[in-house]
Image 1 (cartoon, rainbow, N blue to C red):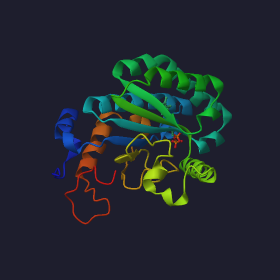
Image 2 (cartoon, rainbow, N blue to C red; image 1 turned 135 degrees about the vertical axis):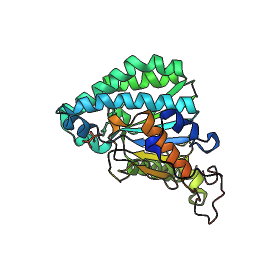
Image 3 (cartoon, helix red, strand yellow; image 1 turned 90 degrees about the vertical axis):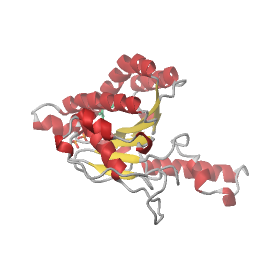
Image 4 (spheres, helix red, strand yellow; image 1 turned 60 degrees about the vertical axis):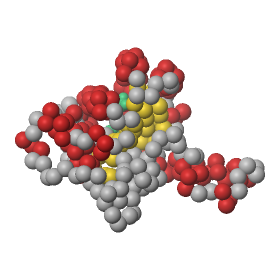
Length: 265
Ligand code: FPP
């Protein structure tokens, strides 16, 4: 595994950043905590929803870059279980945005070959938002250029508890024995069972927490924190994150550096 030397990235154009990416060192699965929409809006004297709306433009750009680079999976944290505690007005506005995004852009997702799927307790969503979620999941189910997983009403601990209780029920009815339970079996009960673990987690807005996102799956993931607010996280910022990822030594607990990012996934 070759490593890029330190780059003075500020002086480089997007094209130059792109040309420094090494195709065989790209992550296969990128996860993102899209944070800072509210602050982006407040800094401009705008309502918080304006930040969420602008954040959708960043979602579009990151999807486009994943497609361009052949990154196969993108998982984004759009609404956590804890987000239900926000003011009703903001929740309604966010659900309205989600509906609008899906209703207007699902044909573009189909055209681009993007499979849309969700993780989380989506049945908690208002019926009209759930309708568009299900419609988009169905209409894109056959596509595989990019697997776009949107975490909605998602919590990592709940996901683990759901897996544990399902395994316990299977043990109870005799379909599984406790001694059958290992990491491989356990991960088959998670909502991401058909995806490799994320290679790279990006969190924007300067916060350096995981916030109950993909707790099991992030065990060996490279973490990238940037002060950039999500609505400002566009193509250039995404390229910088990928370049930084390529400079990391992924050892998966081993002591040597020349391991493939595949090992341990
Ligand atoms: C965090 O910023 C962001 C969210 C809670 C919502 C993210 C949603 C979108 C970008 C739009 C919907 C997504 C799709 C896929 C249509 P924050 O409000 O916590 O920001 P703050 O920390 O500055 O207050």
